[in-house]
Image 1 (cartoon, rainbow, N blue to C red):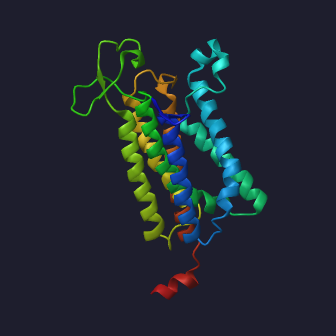
Image 2 (image 1 turned 90 degrees about the vertical axis):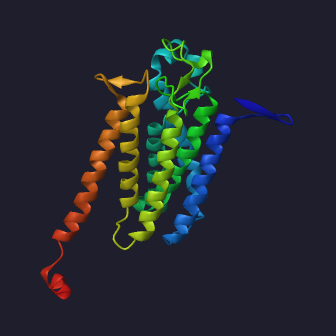
Image 3 (image 1 turned 45 degrees about the vertical axis):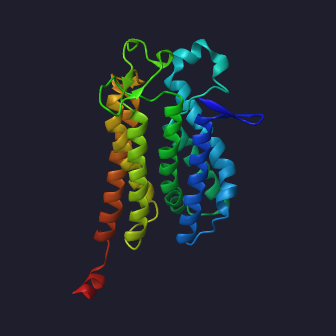
Length: 262
């Protein structure tokens, strides 16, 4: 879906992605200042993080839809379709490269970027709505969304309304944004660098693990949606690392220090 603005054609899918990216940068700017880091680093970091994020997102989507792209290789570069797991992986690589180059704390900057990332995901999912994609199984519930015949999956041509999976995920991502922003402030004296990032992995992992079971025709591995394997691993690793980091810290407190609390 698109509209004309003078001599320009504005595609709503791309517009929502752009708005999400701007929101992510704005939130990261605020978080960088709160954490005592130079927010100007963001603009240089973006020159590495955004391109690698786009490459990763596109690569994940192409692998996901390889049956189509293997038959239409000309569509691999320049076509529509992105995968968030690939975007996160590519963007994370960009953060690692930049922070190592500049001698910055990678974990601290991951914490700074995490709230904006999940907000960007919340906004970007509306691009799926305008493209009439990322919908679930047919439904007669009042909030079911109409899908045009040409955009319906094979086998679902006779149905008109479907679960708005994009909206479910967008809403839960926005709630996750509130959780991350609240945690960073309310528990700032107890959190370690990297904890906000781990909370992001846990939150989004749970969201995707649950919602993935309501999508028709998804990429599977061993009969299980591939996104569920990834999301489940993210949750387990995130929980384990959070527990270990804080539990290990408690174990290593010397007795001489604990006696001060008595």
